[in-house]
Amino acid sequence: MKKSLLLCFALVTYFIQSSALAQESNKLTYYVGIGPAIDGNGGLLGVNLSNELSFALGKRSSLNPSLTYYQSIKYWDQNERTKNDNSSGLFTNVTFKYDILKTKNDFKISLAFGSSFQIGSENGFGGSYLIYDDIENYYVHQYTVERFIRLGYTQQVAFDWKSKNENRRNSVLVSMSSFDGYWPWYLMASYRIGFQLR
Picture 1 (cartoon, rainbow, N blue to C red):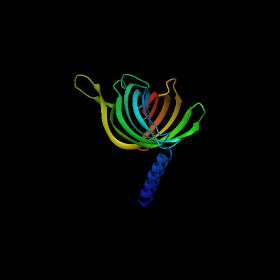
Picture 2 (picture 1 turned 90 degrees about the horizontal axis):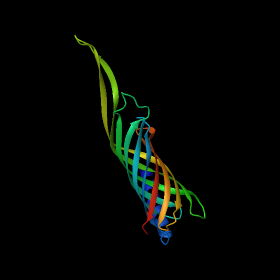
Picture 3 (picture 1 turned 180 degrees about the horizontal axis):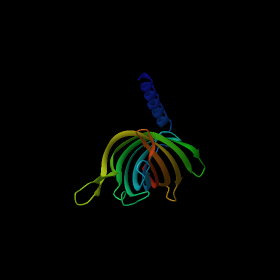
Picture 4 (picture 1 turned 120 degrees about the vertical axis):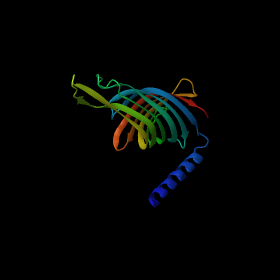
C-alpha cells in the first residue's frame, strides 16, 4: 500500500513539473475517430467510435482521458447458432502516452498505457439439449447473457502526423484492452482527426 502511494505521488509530481516546464508549448488536442474492432473472447467483429482529450505534459508526454463505444456486427465464423451473438460496451480510459519517435516533420509514434473501465454486455450461444416428447424429439437452443461492470487496462500504439491545416492532426490508433486476465479481450483500430484547441 505504501509503495502504491509513493508511486502515485511520484507520478503526480512528475506530471506537475513536466507541465510547468512545457507551459509555453502546452497544447490541448481533441481527437475523434472510428474504426474496426474485434472481441477476442467472443470472436465477434465490430466497430468502435472514440473520443479523446490529450493534455500535453511535456515535449513528448501527455495524459489522455477518453470515451469509446464498441458494438459488434457479426460473428467471425457466422452460422445458424452464432448469428444472434452480440456484444457491446462503453469504455472510459485514462492513459499516459510517451512519444518514442518524433521527426522534424512532426510525425510521431507513441506508446500509451493506462486503466480501462467498461460497462457492457454480451450474449451468445450457450449450447443445445434434446427434448424427448411422445410425438417427436427436438432440440432447444440456449443463449447466455452476461453484463459487465469491470476495471482492466489498455495498451496503445499511436501514429500521429500534422495535417495541411495547422490546427488539425491525423492519427491512427491501435488499442488492446484486457479484462479478467484475458489479453487482449478487445482489439481496436481507428483513424482519428485531432483538433488543437490551444
